[in-house]
Image (cartoon, rainbow, N blue to C red; front, side):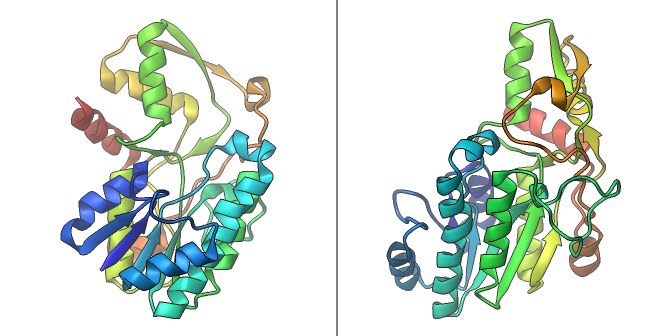
Length: 275
């Protein structure tokens, strides 16, 4: 049995839908991963063979002003899960992020490239990766630019703003791969079923800027919204962002035979599904 922690979140709900009867979910009302006692109690009672941790503090700018909370949830919480899964002999799957990198490589990041986070969120997620290794039977899946039916995300924000305005400004100097949570869930399950361990990257194929992504959203949705360009510096958000954080997912394809579909195809499928 596979236990999904954070089962009510955007990725967690798609993971649960994919697992069906093989899955069981818990969320914040059932487990407090910042407490070792709570984590051990739940995992000892459920005794899953695999734990997929979809729980995280993902407000990138909020992490800058709430560093302690970010580290408790994204760092220490993973340590507690690692200790508890090791104790019951279960594998830990930890979902991580492209934000562990600084974006300065200028080419897609490989799993063994050196992390160098630019912000507190990235630092806390890197701490989670390191803490996952407390359980030797661990799998770390880095992903990026997530959107899905069950949570706040860039696609839904653009659709909402596009319904209110004729023109929007979106940054054009951050490059990555928009990733549908359904495709990420399939990648995670493929890795679990193949018995993979260590670090893997999983994101939809290809890459674009946030500006290109916004234009694609409006084109696919049939909305005549003009999208103008702005820089990350002009946006002036509290947390620094990596400018080029595309992930190389070749290892996932080689080891599992699974390659997530191109990002634009995924976007098209998502928009059809949400109608």
